[in-house]
Figure 1 (cartoon, rainbow, N blue to C red):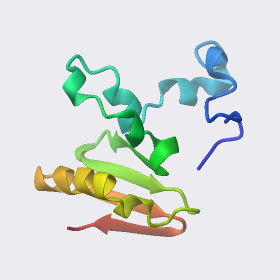
Figure 2 (figure 1 turned 135 degrees about the horizontal axis):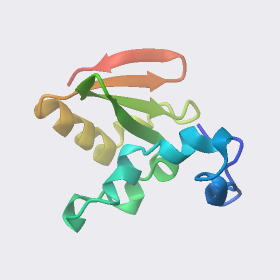
Figure 3 (figure 1 turned 90 degrees about the vertical axis):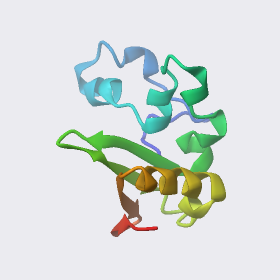
Figure 4 (figure 1 turned 45 degrees about the vertical axis):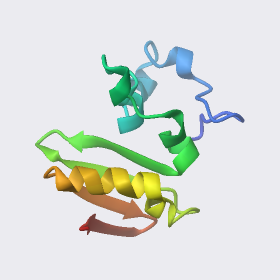
Amino acid sequence: MLCWWTGVHGGCERHNEKATDPLLLACHQFKCVWLASQSHEDPEKRLPRRMRPDQTHVMMGPQEPSDNTLLYVHVDPEYPDAWTEPEIFGYLKDIIKRGGKIEMFVGEERFMLNV
């Protein structure tokens, strides 16, 4: 799940170059659900640090532009059950309860989550 620019402590070694290096444009534009939540005006709607992908081994998002009800969830193949942890699973169930759809990627396995 980690990219080749991930540093020893989990951060991006080339973070300062993302806005200026054309080869890092995709990284500069990408925001997972956790990162996007951190800029929300309402602090109550920001996901806690413990929900960060490097903490949970689950990366959510972004949503599909053509279908804003579809969320992609990628699970670190070294932690295939990480998405079943209560906080993550509860978050995913809440999305589905509100009419969302979740496409899961666990290693080579791909499926729609139905709870």
